Image 1: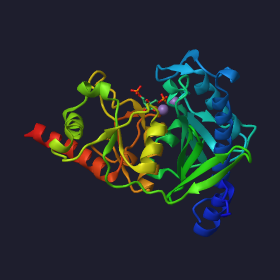
Image 2: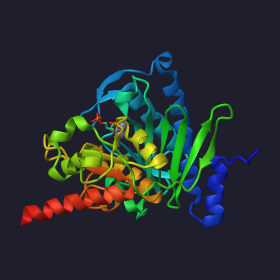
Image 3: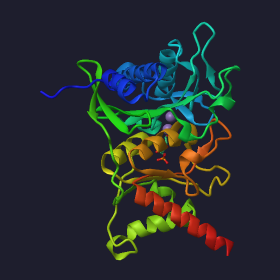
Length: 341
Ligand code: AHG
Ligand code: MN
Ligand code: MN
């Protein structure tokens, strides 16, 4: 039987051999993984655990919260606040940052999360997940504030997600490639099931909510039209489409077999850059996908280079196989140039 490597072993080896993970960061990742295990137990109970349906409350984004959005948020906070590894947390489901209470020691890291991604899929028993991002404070001499969080994604110390699907899978980067762990429910442990994940540079599969196509900018429509034209069109090949409506599950497929995920700007709400959130969704996924040899852009620039202005900032997202993302960026640049002529 081949040797099983647990998440703890993987992290200790990263710490010892590669010097990638300071002790506090290792603890942080283990605590997040433990919280995901707890969330996964609630998800699995479904109707039996009274976790389905709406909580009848609204979050800061003006979205109705599901019971599981709130449960997952609470589990992550409760698990992380006492360990001494964090200064503060920020969540898609909370208006302001959550500073670690005085009764606990404060660490130098900050944790950001989308506690439950794909909320519209909870009640229909389709894959959902948790996405997280880790930043380090630049200056620990003054009290932690929202300004400490406003760092570009390239400064993330770690990022990852957990998919609650047919299997429960944790995918992680600490800036040294991407590793995947599968939850062994009998043992209650995370087992390394893939390391050094690489996304193929080319793909024939895209993921987009096509019902919104007519509201997108011309370069976006050009890209999709060319995909749909298949072998008879400019691309000279047929494309397949998938849309799970949980970014976490769509990105998981892309990390597994390639593809491109698109959630672009929409002219119905022109002042909004997009639907997805930079700090809780685009940055952690951008870090993971780049670490696996893919790319992530908003059409104008690399996602990880965007300087955030606010915690809940939205962004247009094109992420996945490198050559498709580069093509999308080129189409956006060409459109910008021709409108200047
Ligand atoms: P969340 O559940 O955290 O609000 O995120 C949902 C996001 C993303 O995961 C998904 O890709 C997208 O919204 C789905 O949007 P549509 O409803 O347009 O399909
Ligand atoms: Mn989400
Ligand atoms: Mn969410």
